[in-house]
Length: 394
Image (cartoon, rainbow, N blue to C red; front, side, top):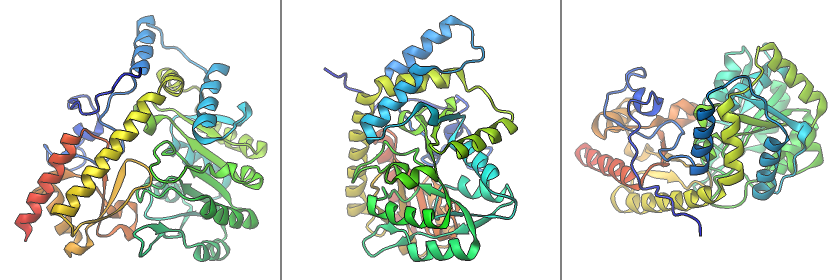
């Protein structure tokens, strides 16, 4: 029988140097806010991971470490079982994080001044790795439909590729922050344009294990031609709350693309990964399925609680129902507040620390991103504080 995991346990993370709880001063925020911004979870990792790390700590030597066949087997087994994707050992390239990998891809496959396309509102480091490397950012903005879901504008997608001479497209699947799990049909239509126009796709699939509606479609696995133009970025960091251990696994089937990417990593001076990250990743993929299944059930309970709470107490706040991720994209535009007034409501009056929507692009005006991967009592307290703040606003 699988052990019942207590996700209701409130764990004090203060004074652990975590940016979520201890970073308020550095980021210009008041102390004492309920932090629901950065995408890490307030849950302990699977017990098997903790035990494996403890045993390694007892060994007492943490020298240069490299993974072996057993590491790949653990990752490959997970991808096959959870996503029906068969990966090859030669495809694997390890990096200390997906954002680092995005920067390496931008440097390796584009030149200064060349165009890289994203779909805003989207995870803000996408913009940073493009603009801070002096590339041209092209935005194929997502469209919020009457169905309350965001959709790709594929007519604009192809037009921008042609007019801006786009060399690379960074895909977010599942999408952060709007929570879309792109369908097979959507990805096929987008991918066929990229094949035709010879656009390299860097697919950030870090949230692939958080899907509530539909099925995560591995972009590179949908079509043989897609495999040749894609760098697929995965990591255990979101799935198992391991972000601080700095480990991600990329899969690059095209040997020429893989060689160029590896060369760029060498130029950056990077070689071996974090010893503990390698160990935690392997153990999590081998033994973490039960933990994840219970987590997904708990997160769906958080969503159900939130759905009912907003409907009863704050119907003027809309939100895009997440098909995936543990992030909720809140639409506060019906409150008719300026950005300054909105932030005053959230931070000063409600005592919450969310991610302001404009962080994800100008199309995020009026929106906020909320991380609900926390004990339900914390979520309830946050919503209660928001409700009371809005009462005073009226």
